[in-house]
Image 1 (cartoon, rainbow, N blue to C red):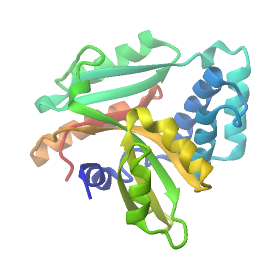
Image 2: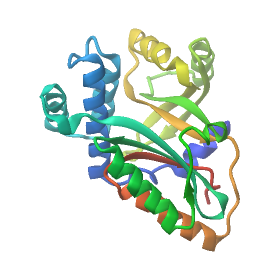
Image 3: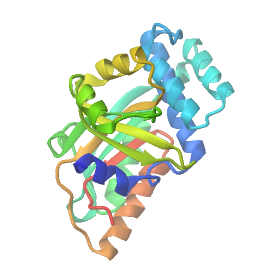
Length: 244
């Protein structure tokens, strides 16, 4: 088991515990995918993946269909832009915030305010890229009789560098794969061609090094992270604080 596995295990169930927030996040990503590649999942692999992810997150089919309809409407409120904000929280913790917003002026003002009130500071976009490794992450339903070692060897040729099994909230065994950021399409295509049941596919940022903090410091940092995650424009938040 590698670094990505340990990082995932520590963060499991923390980041998107709120179902409504999860549905909002996925809805925005579906809108963005439709605007970029069209409403037909057969010809839009990113949309196809998001629909599958929504299904595995128990997002109602009606919500998915509404998001697709909103994307092809002339509603300017759905003109979301994906934006990254980099900054330092209290005690020198690096934080990367990914947002999908239709009003960057509002979003950047909010993000800066959260940093400032916590004693941190907003930096320039991309300034913390060197502290995080971007990864493609896929989850598939564990096929009956799968040999995990053989499967990992098979997936190495498609850009996967870490494979492990874990149990989801329903007690179902899943296979999780971490691979190169630019191998996302290659991995997705191969899994689809081979008939594996893909549960989700997304990108994550893994810190290259995690920083130790005291219990008191952790409490302060987590309050800031909660502020970000409560913001409707924020999609994901990453940090390099070592998990408990």
